[in-house]
Length: 230
Length: 410
Image 1 (cartoon, one colour):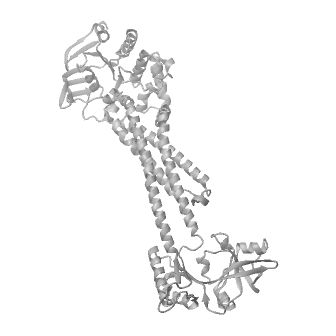
Image 2 (image 1 turned 60 degrees about the horizontal axis):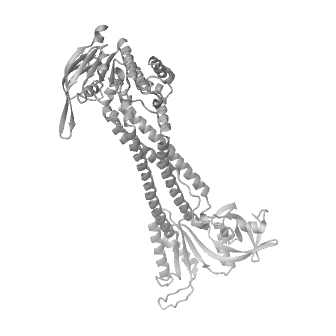
């Protein structure tokens, strides 16, 4: 599903450049539940941004669903993101003046789905994350955990191949963290590839494969107990 | 092209940012309002000037004589100058190709009487062309014609108000009018846009007046209409040339204004034309300045708005929005606001102008101020274009920010 070979990425800082990713090789198959761990500055967010087509790599190859990603322009990237990827962010990134339902329905609008149909689909997904009754509330009327569940519903609504979650529990307390992780596990159990970035061990342990990053290189890549249990 | 979901998005965004939408709308509406009022008021001034000259034809010229004030060729000052038929014929022969209308005038004051109603009125003895020089409008019957001149007929054309004074509601056409004791046939009744005084006049054939009142070939004034094909400069030059020639012919000092002068509407028109031209130039300058200020205002607001929404655009892009859809949504919203607000300003301005109407005519010389359809359309197009521009550039910039950068914005 995601295949990365010798990926390099550096950011210019003034006249110098900061070499963030120094040759990453990573292969994630369909249906995997992977977490990327590392301290801040290890390059894990950069990796997710590149995988999520939010940023462009400098060197190496990146195949998404077998398709080589290169010479991306914003339009092509937007189409691919809409088709293959669902995003969950640490800060939720819901649009503040839209209701939960409208937020969830937005990716379907960009897919070109009619209004009636997409609101119905969005409602189904809100039900799935247990927020059907909150459909017509604005984001600032929801708790952090509820917002993240809305964001997850929004990530799932287009039936993407991969869900990318950047510190999905970073802004949540432990109880809500568990409920969000349970949700991600359920999604994975339904066969969706889930790609989580975190710096919390407890979160990483609930995934099936942990890739540890340090200073732009992978230092370990192992399957967890959770994966063996299945 | 019409995308109901796009409009839904736009109305949601406008509704969510009501204050900002109202502010940017107000900027534009106010600019257009000022623009409309300025243009309307100048057009009102222009109307007043045009009307001031509505009495006579735009191409009229008058040869006037009085007494000499300068000695010339041994002739003393104070000599009374008299125009005669010969002078009229001379002008006609010399400048025939530059003249559209021509007429002599003799001014008289007569007592007009019909049955028991009578009054003193100014009567002008004229040639048929005089109708066009004075812009006389025939309501009933006809004007003086060539046959009247040839037969020296005792016919008269009276103004609408003379008819009202003497005949009231009764018909006057074909009746006989007592003019200083002689009986004249009323062949026509006229009106004139030059005002009441112009409608308390009467016209009779030139030849009739010359034979009955003096038995000479004296005329009071020569009235001409220069060929409309001449431009203003050529017409002014023609008037000056004729003035020199006539003074020379009649042994008048070349600079003696009082003895003989040619009053030329071309000069007045030129003056008014220049004056209005300058006024319009100032208004266009100030008006465009106002519009530009409005456009800059809305550009500022748009830059701020787009900055504010950068993160939202980042989210939308992460969810699959193409850059074109981001640009489209912003541009459409701005154009909607500018167009609506522009029309509001325009309608309000037009409404205010219509309220003013003729009420400022007496004191401020502003008559029936209005804006022409061309200006309205022009201003609207400028508005839509500026709305497009004011939003397109920053929106394009925002849409091209990488989503990762946009998402980081706060």
